[in-house]
Image (tube, rainbow, N blue to C red; front, side):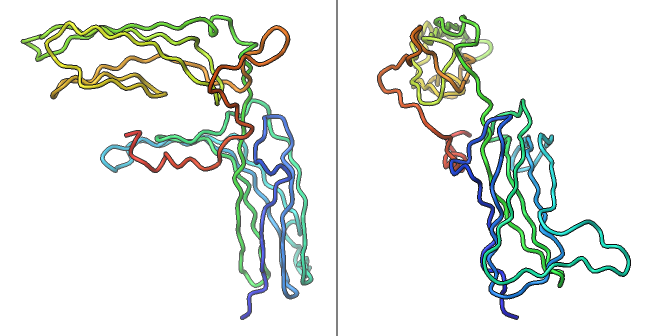
Length: 275
């Protein structure tokens, strides 16, 4: 049997795929046929969900999920046919488009993809032929819940300090302490801004500090040998709108490049750098 369906796509009006809570998600379902096709319905589904999965040694120990959007609509066809009636539709060959528009709820959490979970939004569409064949496709879109640093407490714009002291050595034979002090220029940033980190390490132990490393999630100290890692955490806020001067202009620092859209593909999630 020759294939009748040539193209079956979800095309969003916003090509950047970036939406804010409260805005409208609009687009069309694109169907291209090369022959008359009898169908019983075209079904559209918008879904937003948060998923958490924690695993140990390759085994899933805990998982949970909650829905933020779960909206279904029928773009073509009617409800369940009555007895003896025939509500099936014949689509002609060529291109057919079926528009949709939906207001996104306020307060949606931002899209997030991480090692142990994610918040993801996507559209799903299904075209059911009378013969029983079902064609499916889906399209991911990004939700960004805006956070304006100018409306947050002024404390976030002040230097941020943290200090930790830990003892190295075996339980009965301590070799001394290591003190780490870290300061950030402030406590709130937006994507594209550089984070200035000032660190001071005082090693009063007999253990050699092999190296230090700063990453976006924590600050580590690696002693030489089988000693434990010393971790120091400084919580920061990642916002959407950066700090502005009193005249409304941006406070730009050297090396700052504000992005216009969020990336859809996160290649680092498939690497071992976060383990």
